[in-house]
Figure 1 (cartoon, helix red, strand yellow):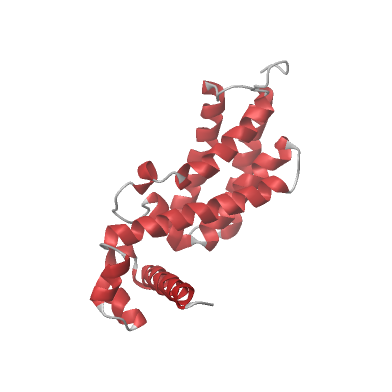
Figure 2: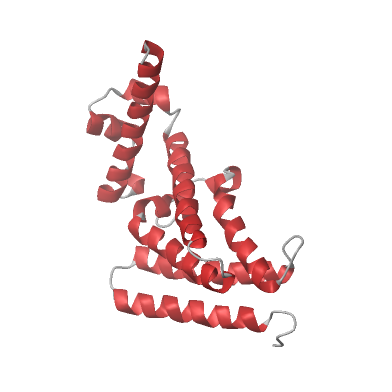
Length: 206
């Protein structure tokens, strides 16, 4: 390996160390407690070095958000690939979405601003649309849509998303919701919305 390649690998490792340290601080102290100085102290680097990789705190949070959406899309894509039946794909994808939000608690908070005042990075990150497109494409398959998503397809996407994101937000903000209750609400909501979706398929009747 040449010196240029070693330097690039070192720079990428430092960048990753900074982002990992930021995630750990967010986990331990909350996102509003995050500062570039705390990150520098955590990885035993100087603050000026941190600014060589990220212009400011918002720049760092944007990259953490980007990483989060890439990881979310990977989880959803894996669930999608496990079966070719869209009626099984869609609930499995939403379960994968839920599991991501639970396992990547701090990332999800940044991505959607839960308990955290931040810029709306989603509007400027193409990665934020990738998982949305996957969900809508499967809904379109169920509805037998061939062209651009109809108002009906979008309605069902936002019905799923608002319900599941709302439940996730409650669990992030409060710690007194029993896991069993959360799963009962989640599976019940998925079953109910899926039934409405299937009933709205042309030819089936409402």
